[in-house]
Image (cartoon, rainbow, N blue to C red; front, top):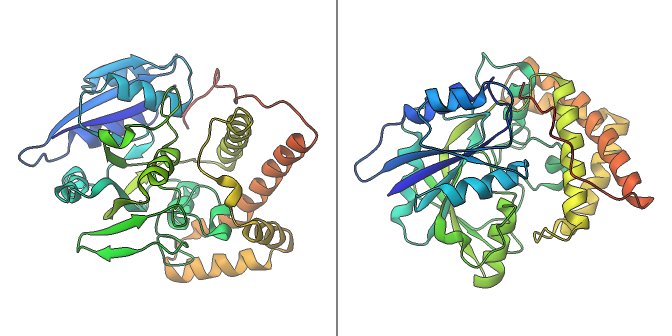
Length: 339
């Protein structure tokens, strides 16, 4: 089995060396080989030098610049029959990570695997630790219950009712159109055959791929492995605000262009309303923060309130722009820099 790590990059010199170092440190079991594929969106810093120095096997261009386009470009250049989608700000937490993620593929029903949690490291910035503790990068997901990593507030890896079979080191999930969390990023490993018959070119939206296969086959089996992955999501609230602006602009643009298939309009409207009311009234956020701190004590939980307020503000302006008919466009990447 050849596993191709596909890593989209754009001015990623601050995180890429640690990302690639952790991949190269993996202990490869018999029968597993590794390939590192970098899809570059036009980096102007030292990203490509780091990629070469750290042993990238393939470096290809990503002219469309977005992370989703980078996944497509990287997969096209990859040779593996198994693809591991790892972002440049992801760090594999230990040398056994790949072996554990690949083990469920011994079950022919399993089409993909994903870590069940984000790894919390004490040395990381407080905002990074907060998002790892929360188990998601967007707090609205907590209220809609549509998330896919262990959450320090609920103690669960998702709020949806997903049929699950415990296999010891991993959970075997049966995903259907009515039970499909936002699986597919930050350490998502899948058989290349999962892409057959799906719309993944020129933009690969991971959750859309699963949804399209479910629409065709009725259900798919995915393994949630009882391990984690580090996500250096952001070091400052300013970084988070910038990423939320990019997220909402990209989402509205691709929705406008009808390039998404996952039914986001099915999101629990009551959850979104509850998020707005909780953020405005503040008390429910404080209760969540206290629950999270009691489960996993860390001062990083103090970021829960400002993160929710930033999200409400940014998404609110995005919704207003859509309401008044503003034509949407992809967020500008020309000055993008990983922090």
